[in-house]
Amino acid sequence: MPKCPTCTKEVYFAEKVTSLGKDWHRGCLKCQRCQKTLTPGGHAEHDSKPYCNQPCYGILFGPKGVNTGGAGSYAYAKK
Ligand SMILES: [Zn+2]
Ligand SMILES: [Zn+2]
Image 1 (tube, rainbow, N blue to C red):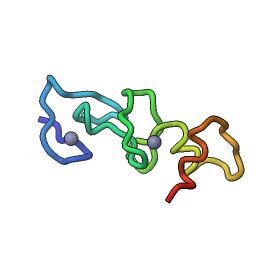
Image 2 (cartoon, rainbow, N blue to C red; image 1 turned 120 degrees about the horizontal axis):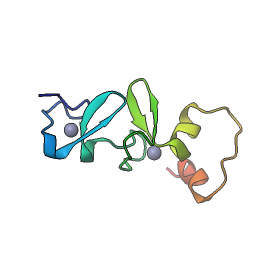
Image 3 (tube, rainbow, N blue to C red; image 1 turned 120 degrees about the vertical axis):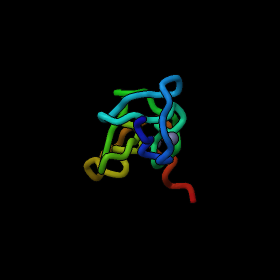
């Protein structure tokens, strides 16, 4: 039985999603920054951890100074 990289518990078939070559619980495949649930194969990855493409990956790892546009761009400014 594969183990979920997020919670380290076993992943049963009914709740399994596969992304980054690993098996995750459906609810555990979420952005490590904003906790948004991700679509398998439709998200970014860094250090084997899943992130959403925008805005999180761009903010954390993208080129500096890129203005991604949209309301989500400014979410990181909130404390
Ligand atoms: Zn899990
Ligand atoms: Zn995110």
